[in-house]
Length: 203
Image (cartoon, rainbow, N blue to C red; front, side, top):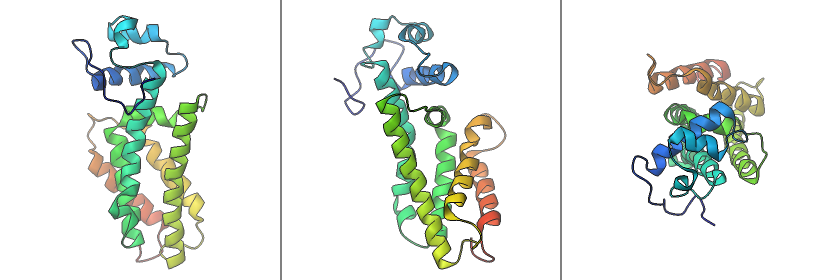
């Protein structure tokens, strides 16, 4: 069985794997993964069902690849040297900024990730990876609390949930063609986090 890590198959004229995946993910987000049949995808793409298999082995593999694009990008932010070494406050700023930029640049894929229901093994694995990302941000807030740069009345778990709640909401309203750039948005999110979670003269 073909997996998400195998080389992309040679496609039909008009689509490569990435451009096809954009159409597929848009359909998943609009209709829901379970309600999006291969027939619906074929109609959207203007291809026969058999032609789709030149790119992907199954609908499940489409989901796996799409979720991987979002999760790989987020994990890269949290696993980078800037997120794992250096002053805790700088690490927190790096991961929050990076998460905002990932959401802006990969909005359809992150939207799909955030709407998972856990109905399939692929979804459950993606949700596990997402929880691990949550845990890494919470661990940074715990370090910040221990060194006195996180306000003492703010629990790290609450800080993590409030922060990611704000960041994740971006997928519901952000428009890439709007007046706000991803960098400006990241600055705004960081300012809200700084003023809401810091001890004086820390974050």
